Length: 111
Image 1 (cartoon, rainbow, N blue to C red):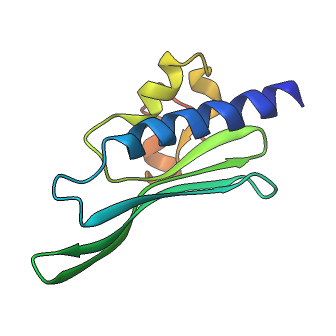
Image 2 (image 1 turned 135 degrees about the vertical axis):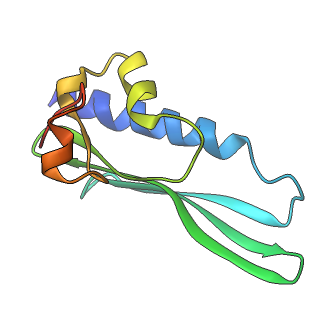
């Protein structure tokens, strides 16, 4: 349970840091969605830019079977590497946006 709580906190810290970078024009809001009961975590952008609607998931992380799954990474940052730098073992991080076949060629968990 302590490991799970640690993973939850580190995910929330990382997404909060990413959300703090904000939007250059101030018209797009960064929203954090933390479902700590079901272990789903997202950073989404919502707003308007040049009369165009902006809505989308920037980062989506889940905790499944004791591992952090990076489901989507729409940033310039290597989220998996950042999590590892925060002390989470690479074998507890799954790049869910890669097929299971491709995951075997990374330093991270297969699933």
